[in-house]
Length: 87
Image 1 (spheres, rainbow, N blue to C red):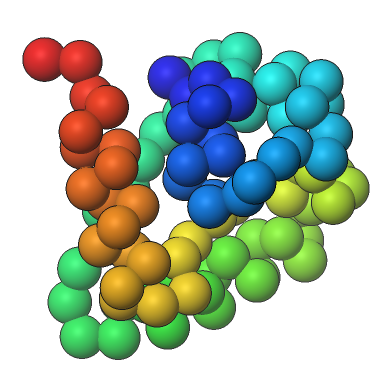
Image 2: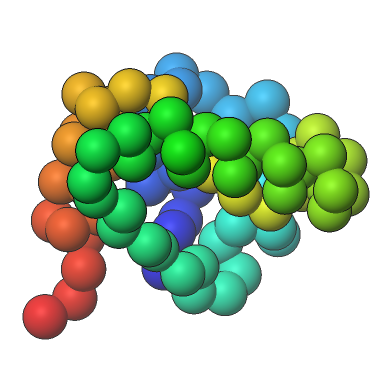
């Protein structure tokens, strides 16, 4: 489960601009994590993200879907989540 500290680390933010809203939206329930791999995975998930945000977004803080913008960011976020998973 994400907490505000993990949100900061995940997005590489120095501070939360809307901590109460982010805590209520991201940190209250477990979030599903999908690991997508293969040729063009980053580009294809970015395309899916934009499509889903356009169709289902409920405001700038509730945009339903995240995907990294590069392979480097994808690897960093994957390792971060993997290191936080309870075993």
